[in-house]
Image 1 (tube, rainbow, N blue to C red):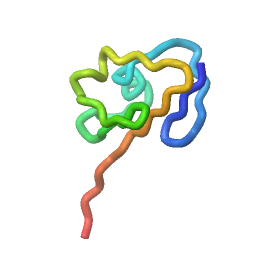
Image 2: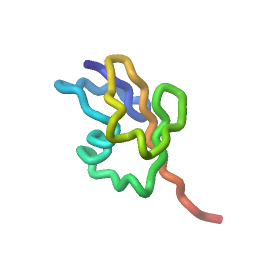
Image 3: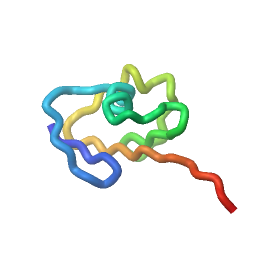
Length: 66
């Protein structure tokens, strides 16, 4: 299946949940927000939301500065 993650098309051989995707990429869930097909997701839904073909995922980190 093909999904777009942060603007890059990726080919996945198996279905992953959003939580599993973050874990596979070594991303600390406490440091990001996930936009899934245009909607910001609640963190509680990450483990049960399974990615499907043609999904678009944006993983956003907030960086402080000034």
